[in-house]
Length: 265
Image 1 (cartoon, rainbow, N blue to C red):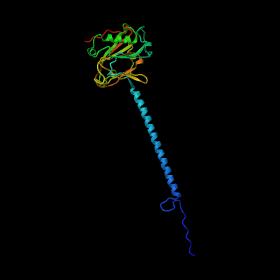
Image 2 (image 1 turned 60 degrees about the vertical axis):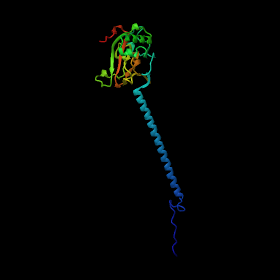
Image 3 (image 1 turned 180 degrees about the vertical axis):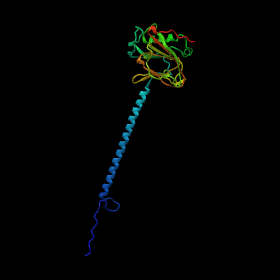
Image 4 (image 1 turned 90 degrees about the vertical axis):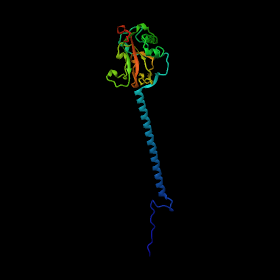
């Protein structure tokens, strides 16, 4: 008897009709589809994590740069013509370690900017009565008698450009407190003799407040003034081009620290 041939068993890859998948083919296709969907989800999740990290890193970088620069509000813009701008702030304790003079030592502290004391033409000529007019304006702003204030040293002319500093004294851009640096200071004023963004770049005056620093953009004839304690921590931005001219005029309440008006030679 001729041996009977047995049909070969169907394996997993065996299908039905040619060109159509069988049950094994359907399972294989489903597994590939599942893996594809999972990989797609992983790719989406990875992209989302990367984007979130980049956003967080960008926010941290922005906060760092903003904290470093700290310039968030301009107190006085160059293009403004300010009659009288004054901001009162709490006094620091710097005055407590010095002899107090009733009616002069700051009990009201703050900072002000005005373009109404000195004209541009007068700033160019530096008239002899400039000190007296600035002194009267400060006394008015802080509610004291100008007679109780005395010009004190150092009162000086400054010329700042982008030349490399030769000594630490030349490094004007560091934050400082006038009352700490010069114990005799009670009130500080600056008379600007040149224009920000026209005569020089950079060089803005910066009050370093917590959270929201304030800047003053110099213009010829503008006067900024403030109580000299640590309530008015400040610095000057580095000058990038041109030359910035200003005169620092400081006042004390202690007659022992007073000086006469400088004489221009």
